[in-house]
Amino acid sequence: MKARVHVMLKDGVLDPQGEAIRHALGALGFDGVDGVRQGKVIELDLADGTSRETVEQMCEKLLANTVIESYAVEVG
Image 1 (cartoon, rainbow, N blue to C red):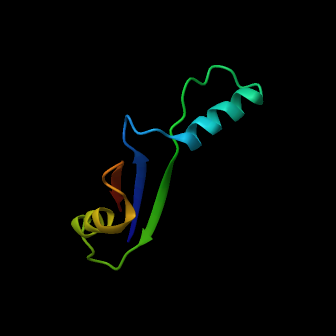
Image 2 (tube, rainbow, N blue to C red):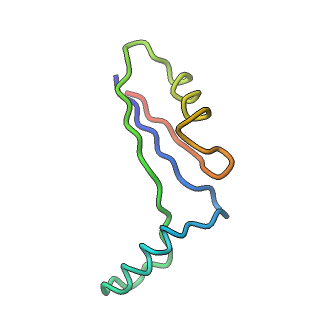
């Protein structure tokens, strides 16, 4: 079984890497990009029977810094 965790900075948290991407896109001639938020995707190969709640515990304890990041879990 696979799980995918999407981790993003929460709204209001500065994203200097996203800003650098936005600036670089403009420099390359891609106009019209007003903002970029950069995040990460973590794919987990899980043993059968591993629950969504277990993956959420992984996020709370290690995979996401819940003070400044939010996460979404896909299992399937």
